[in-house]
Image (cartoon, rainbow, N blue to C red; front, top):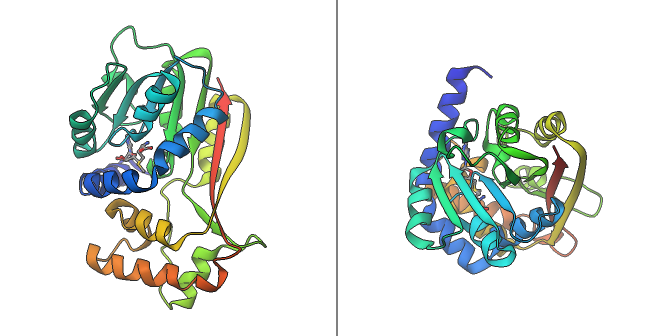
Length: 266
Ligand SMILES: C[S@@+](CC[C@H](N)C(=O)[O-])C[C@H]1O[C@@H](n2cnc3c(N)ncnc32)[C@H](O)[C@@H]1O
C-alpha cells in the first residue's frame, strides 16, 4: 500500500472514530464487550498482575480501564482519534492510566525516555483498521522487554455450525452489495506480522452466541457501520444494519459470533 493511500485511510479512520465516542461509550456501558474482550486477550497473552502495558488503538480507554481495575496494570494507551482520547481523559481518573493521541506506527513519539520496557502490547479490536500493521508491530516490539508479549483480537466473524460466513449470506439475502473488504488489514496479514516479531505465536477464539441486538448495537457505532456500508450516510447505514441481521433470524439458534485472538512472545 503506498504512503498516500495509508495517509488517506488513517484520516478516514480518525474521522470515523471522532464521530463515535459517545455511541462507543453507550454501547460499552450496555454490553461491557470491549472490557470482556480485553480480559480474554490479556489471558491469551499471559499478562501478570501489575504489569506494564502498551495499549495500541486504545480508543476512549475501555481496554486500559479494565486492565487497571482487574489486573492492576499500568497502561499507556495511544489512539489516532483525538476525540476518543479526549473522552477517555475526561472520564478516567486513574493514576495507572495515561492516554495519548498517536499513530500505531510511532509509539515512541508519545513515550517518555524511560518508557521502553513494557511487559506487553495489546491491539484490542484495532489491528484490522491499521493499514501498516506490520510496521506498527515492529515499532511496538522495540518498546517491549525481552520476553514480553504482543497480542491482538480481530474483527468478528459470524458463522453457522458448518463454518459458513453468515455476513456474506445476509448481504445476499438482502440483495445488498457486499463491502469489498470489511477490514483494512486481513487476519492472515496481521498474523504474519505478529509471527515476524514473535516466537510461540498461539491462536484462539472467543465464541459468543448469535445476538441480533448485540450486532445491531455493535455495528451502529458509526465507525463500525462504515465497515459494512462505507459509502452511505449514517442514518441509511443504521436502517440497513437492522435489515442485514434480521435476515439471519432463521440461523440465530445455531450461529455464533467468533472473535479470533493471536498472541506471541518477543
Ligand atoms: C474498535 S476501537 C478499540 C478501542 C479499545 N482498544 C477498546 O478495546 O475499547 C479501535 C481503535 O483503534 C484506533 N486506531 C485505528 N487505527 C489506528 C492507528 N493507526 N493508530 C492508533 N490508533 C488507531 C481507532 O481510532 C479506534 O479508537
